[in-house]
Each structure stands twice: as structure tokens, then as C-alpha cells.
Image: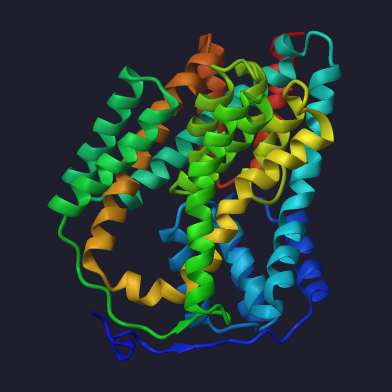
Length: 407
């Protein structure tokens, strides 16, 4: 049985700012933070460590490590933790609203354009966005494979995960693959022990953290049960998006296969609309999880429009908040456990395989139909990876070229 003194000491940081201050700081970032999760973390460091000095480099790197360990969108969870540390619970909410709502509102407006456009499925704009999605997912697979699959064992886990997802298409197979990856990592990997470090818990007690983590787990079990009992399409969608938010490891791009497996086979969203929205999500600042707002907005009644977009946006982000706030007081003791590190390394390798499978189907198979499509995808990939061109510029180029081909 662990004694309290067995755990490293934690420096409790009490709120020292206002929710309005947090909201305005994150609203600026929500309007200007292009480039994906890694770029977002760089923007956060410049704004809150260098310029505003809300915390030091060590405190910031500790929050980043925690949020990369947890499922969910790492950059959004870092933002929530920063808001919580600065202005308490209202600060966490203000950080999420400021960072997320600009992109979510833009994608809901794009959804209205999709719904009202006659013959939009065959338009050059949609075709260009779908080809752009190929380049974006390929970039994510390549970058993640280099960092998360550095040895043959984890490379094999990724390949096995991709094959399982291809051969056994089901929303549940992805969860099974993650579990198997974690088990393989736990039993077969050998990783160096992490050194102890002081941890800032943002004033969240262990009791509060345990309640939040328990609530997250209960919702993960209860929402599918409510959906099955009520036979309600609304609750089925909420349960699916909550599950995606709670089980997605590896960042925003990895949510693509889980959401696609939930909404497209069920007939809630067509595959063309799904990929068009995903492509459009690359052109807006802020977190990729705001893609959920687009999907909710294009779904049929009782979802759809503003209500559906905002409802599913909240559904996918709720577990992110519960997990990061709940894990903060336990983080330092967890990260010291070698078994936890091995499990997470195996899970992350499986994530690469799941995203690699999605790169082929549905992303490639839905977007690439000609040699010209392959050429555009390669150009977009080269601009993103080697040219380091802004995704906004690459989206505009893809849409322009797609429109010229089909007009």
C-alpha cells in the first residue's frame, strides 16, 4: 500500500487571473493558430511561456507530456489545463471556447453551404478538398510513424493494426486493436525509466480528480446503453462522438477513422460530405476536433444545423476536459510506472496503423480516381512536408485546381 510520502511532491498553483483574460488570449489563438496540433503547442509556448509568463518552461513541458499521454486532442487539453491553472474551472471553459469556437462556427457555416449547394458532390471544390485530405492524412501517418514506431516491434504493431482494420471493418475493431497494441507493448517493449520531476496540479485535488475520471468512465458506458434503450438516433450520435473523444490517441487526425466508421456506414453522413468537411477543417485555425461541428451540422434531423453542430462538438470534447482535469493530480505517480509507459507506447504504435488504414480506405479510395488526382495529392503533400507551406495555401491551391479540372 502506497504511503503519501511515496509520491513526488507537487507544487499547487492557485488561480491568479480572470476567465475573461483567458478567453481573450485563447480567442486570439483560435483565430490565428493554423498548422495542426504540433504548431498549436508552439503558439501556446510563445504566448503563455515567453510573452505572458503564465508558467515556466518546465511547467509547460510537463503539461504537454501529460496531454500527449492522454487520449484526446493534445493541444486543446493543454489549453484547458492552462486555463484551469490561470483562472480555475471558468478559466478552463473560457480557454476551450476561445480556442475552439472560431473554427467550429466556420465549419458549421461551410456545412450550410454543402447542404444548400445543388450538385455539390460533383463540384471541383469538394473534389479538391478530398484530394487535399489525402495529403494531410499521409503527412500525419509519416510524421507519427517516425516518432511512434522507432523500432521493428512497434512497426510490426502498426502494420498488424492496419491489416486488422482493413480485414475486419467495424467501429469496435479499432478499440480492440488499441487494446492489443497496449498488451503487446506491456509484455514485449523495453523502455528507459523516466526520472522524477516536480508537477503542477493546478489546484485540483486527488478526490476531485478521481470523481472526474470516474464520471468519464461512467459516461463511456452509460451513453451507449441510453442509445440502445431509447433507440434514439440523437443519443447514438452523442455516444459515438463521446467514445471517439475518449478513445482517440495520437491527436486530431486519428479521429478521422473512428468518426468515419460511426457516421458513414450508418448513413448519417455521406462519404463525400465527410471527406469534404475534413478537407475544409484543414483550412481553419484551431483544433481538428472541431470537425465534429461540421458533421453534426450536416446530419439529418433531430440533429443538423446549429443545434447538431454544437451538440456533437460538446460531446466529443467532454471526455477531453474530464480526462485532463482528472489526471492532473495523479500524473507524476503514473508517469513513473514503467508498465504504463510500455502500454502507451504499444497503443501509440497501433494508432499509426489505424490511421494508415484510413489513409487507403476511405481517404484514398474516395478521392483518387485519375493520374491527375495522384499528381495533385503529391504536390499538396510535397508543399506540406518539404515546402512547409501553410495548410491554408495548400487548401486554396487544391480547391482551385480541382475546380479547373471539373469545369
